[in-house]
Length: 123
Image (spheres, rainbow, N blue to C red):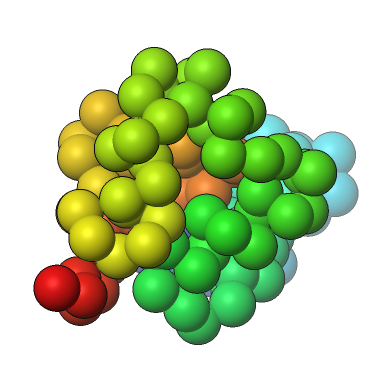
């Protein structure tokens, strides 16, 4: 039996759903039945994380999650270290950096994929 972990991308999601379909009719009490229950949980969690996010650009998503958690610009600056840069990013004057994406993904519980979507800068 393959060892399963949290599903983090589309490829792993496909593997999990394919395996779930293979063992869907397994008998209760078998190893495959336990694997099926685990896969159902992992698949459900991945789908909720992916599909509960609004379809907005990364900056709007950051603003929404800041509001969800009651965070201010200064809170993000504590995490990233530069209030001026964060202000520019939130005002579409500067693009998110890889470091910001990693830190904000963790801080705001946003999948990295959602923060790497393309968006337009203003001026």
